[in-house]
Length: 175
Image (cartoon, rainbow, N blue to C red):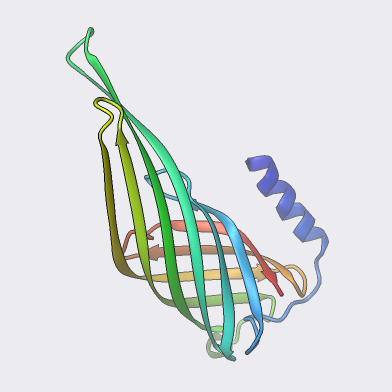
């Protein structure tokens, strides 16, 4: 995975030219990448649409899977495992701070709110029990992008306040 990320970074670096950020009104961009979490490594894909020169609305889908292991009862104890599968669907709105902070056009700094639904399925390896825990959440995010060309950039975002809380890193492609 590191090789893919580093290769992507250097390919985008090779395309270095000036970009226009944030996404213009009526235009769209796609975001793809991986996240940081205590519950597996999320993979995400999303989009943003410009609705005002400083405001975008968008959506995102994420998926993560992880496995847990426990041992109890001393040297000859029992082992326990469980598998979790987590799907997330969210909508977001972001205010882009480029004009206010007079940020160069190849950079894009933003902050916003999100609302989403998370479906959390867990399979107990001890007795093959199965549970499902889902719910709505409201949160906030702050992030930034650096565009290497008119169409390609890297993004980094941190969020908090709900089940989407974590960070993420990926690429942005303007359509």
